[in-house]
Image (cartoon, rainbow, N blue to C red; front, side, top):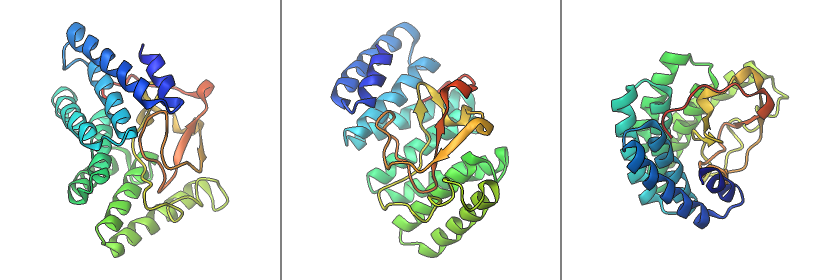
Length: 233
């Protein structure tokens, strides 16, 4: 049922995806409980579908719940918790709550820089998101400083002619944002980045509902993917 819902999302049939994901969530709550990792993953997936449907308030409410439970279960510094924070910040931005988005994105960036290093792809994604929110708030000097930093690091990492570099971060659209995503139930934080190709993304992923753009996104070569278990959506 969950796989079919994912397929509906990939086809842009978000209403069908929503109905199935609601059923999956009810079943998992009953069988596993609200705090089980599989239940939290389903909540996160449903929140993404709400975002696809423009129901940003519903998405935010679910993501707040997932974040609370992930933090309690895994701790504030766990990659899944940080991914959930990033998704919630995206919903805040969708709702025009840019100050709240900035506070969360700053926290995500701070923790990823400490845990992963400033040059890690997840850290660069967080930098790009925060730069976008600075722009949303009219703090253009701060946005420029972060964008220049991301561009320098991406150029050093990938080279000037790499596909990931031109779209990072200057070619972003005003309504594009990089956010953590789930592809087939595996988070971006779980990828083996040495086996990932960079591409110029579209603004919104139909399969996940998360906003992409700003500093680029990863296209995973499925045969080369080396996932680690994901707990929260």
